[in-house]
Length: 388
Length: 78
Image 1 (cartoon, rainbow over the protein chains, first blue to last red):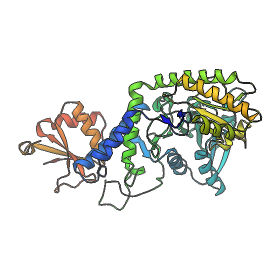
Image 2 (tube, rainbow over the protein chains, first blue to last red):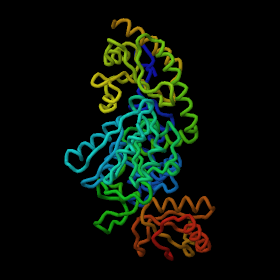
Image 3 (cartoon, each protein chain N blue to C red):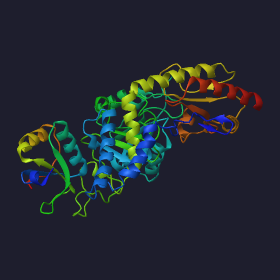
C-alpha cells in the first residue's frame, strides 16, 4: 500500500496484524449488509444468519485448536478480557499463583491487582541459562496453596517460545490449573489444546489469527468451572432472571461483536486452508533472514535466542541510539512501521535487562517479504549513521 | 419444509442457539432434511430456535444426536 513517497512496510504484526486477507474485509462487509440481526435472539432470518456466523467461527477455532466441543471456546472482546475471566474466575482468596518472568501486562496487571488486595501470593519464575523459563525452579515453587500456573506460549518481546507441554505435565502431576496466554502464537504455531492437556487458553483475534481488533477468546477445558465476569442477556432461558450455567452462554452475555467475529472466522478459515504449519514455516524463514541481516550491523544486540526456534518477533538495541528515535525516523522518513519501548511487558524487559529503555521490535507477518526486510535494513543503517 | 411436511414433523428444542446450530450441522452432514424454526408457541423452550425434522427420520436423528453426545432439551410433536 502506498502512502506518500514510500510504500508502507508494516513490521508491527505482534501488536496487530496488517493487512488482513481479502476475505476478512469481505466477510465483515457481508455480515453488516446481510446478517444484521441480533444473533439467535429473534428467530428471523437475519438473526439466525448472525448466529450462524458466530457458530461457524467457534467451530473453526475449535478445529484450529484441536478442541472437540466448540462450546468450550468462549468468545470475548480481546485476550485481556479472556485472561481476566480466567484469572479472576478461578482464583480464591489465599491462593498461590506461579507465572513467568516474561508476561505481558494483560497477565501481570490482573495478578498484581489481586495480590494488592491480599487475595493471592505470586511467584515469578525467570529464565535459566539457555531457556526462557527455568522449569525445575518452577516445579520447586509449587506449594500446597498453588492453584494456578500462568505462562505465555510465545514472548511478544523476544519471540522466545515457552515449553507449554512440559508445564502442562507439571501442572497435571500436581493437580494445578494451567492457563496459557497464546496471544502471540495462535495462528502462527500449531496448537492442539486437547493433546497438550491445557486447562485454559486465552487468545486474541487480531494478531496472527488475522481477524479484526475487538475479538478474542478463551478455551475452557471440560471440568473447569469459572466464576463469570458478567451476567446478562443470552437469548436463552429468557423466562429466568438467573444466568444460564451452560456453555458458551454462561460466559457470554450481551449482544456480541458479530461483525468482528465474522472477520475473525474468515481469518481462521484462511489459516485452516493455508495450513498453520506452512504459515509457521514461512514466518520462521523470514525471521532467520531478518536475524542474519541484523547480525551484520556493528554493535547490534539481539535479544532472545536467535539460534533457537522462535516467533517472527525480533527485539534489538543499537548502542547509543534510542529505540524511539529509530522507530520515529523509520516511520516518518521511510514509512516503515516498527515498535519501540516496552511493548506492555515491563517485567519481560526487567528479565532481559532492557528496562526502562526497552528495545526496537520488528514483528513479521505472513504477507511480509525478504524485499521489505532488505529495504528496512538499508533504512536502519542510514538511520543509525545519521544518529551517530 | 412445506405445510404438508409439517403434518408429519417433529420438533427438537435446545438449551442454546449453539446447541441448535450444532445439531442442524450434524443432521445436514448426515443427509437429513431439517430446518431451524422459531419455537412454536405451544412448546416451552430455553432457546428461541428449534429443529424441525421429518417424522420418518426422527429415530435415526435421535440416535445420531445421542451418539455424537449433542445437547438437546426435548422432543415434541408439531
